[in-house]
Image (cartoon, rainbow, N blue to C red; front, side, top):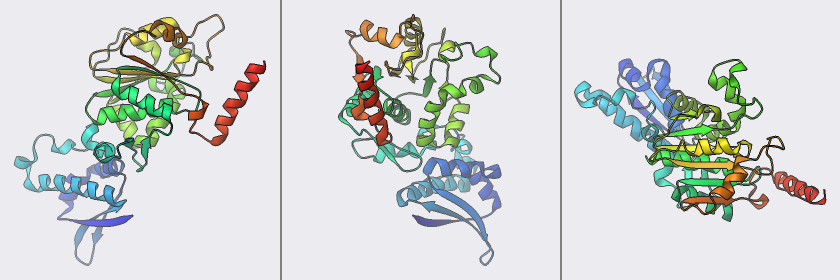
Length: 326
């Protein structure tokens, strides 16, 4: 951890740089993974902005702050029309690129907390390579194999590289019978419990504040499967999670929402369907329907790819042994 300081000329300059009630300061903290604080040096009668964090992040934050400060000091003629919104919802500029431009060759993104996300098994490497190369990929495997987490990382990478303009998240709401109108609250409140696992992945990579900001600006859009009919998503990264709980009709409807410039990742575990015994899983059906379609990839992950607590792999293996005996 290092600490660097930047002198500001007056309170008006500080307000322009940091925003009312420090809203831009907090955004920059999330964007660059640093701590910012403004204090008055009574001895020198100066305002001092302190930046603290890992050296590389502090340097990136200071460069961005100095660039913005130069625009402010040049005045309206030099600032350009977009300067006041420099840290709002532009996913490429506001995020500090999430370290995509200076990552190790085998890494996907760097999280808001400085952690590098990369594959941790051969099957995961194949899965990631397929997502980066294909427009439609199915990730199939048991819990804990990273199929959803890595798909989220790939979505953020595509967003930061400008390959897509937004991310669409969806899940079937089996427990509510897809009838959300009877639940209290607005749409997001109704589906929140079902999408929480997806939120957790974004929280760990973006931080909760930036995720909420991007969701509010619809850079990240949450769409329950039942509400997708009639829509077409262009230039988007579309992620359908828990796809084993879709019906064949729902799966067909979902896949035909794909517009130009979009890519789709579908994840699921065919051993954990919550559908009734009389209903065929859309994920199981689509594996047969699209098995010979060029441009579609089916990636299998196994208990050997489990990256959660070491006991999770043992639990999955124990259940498989029990099922075989039964």
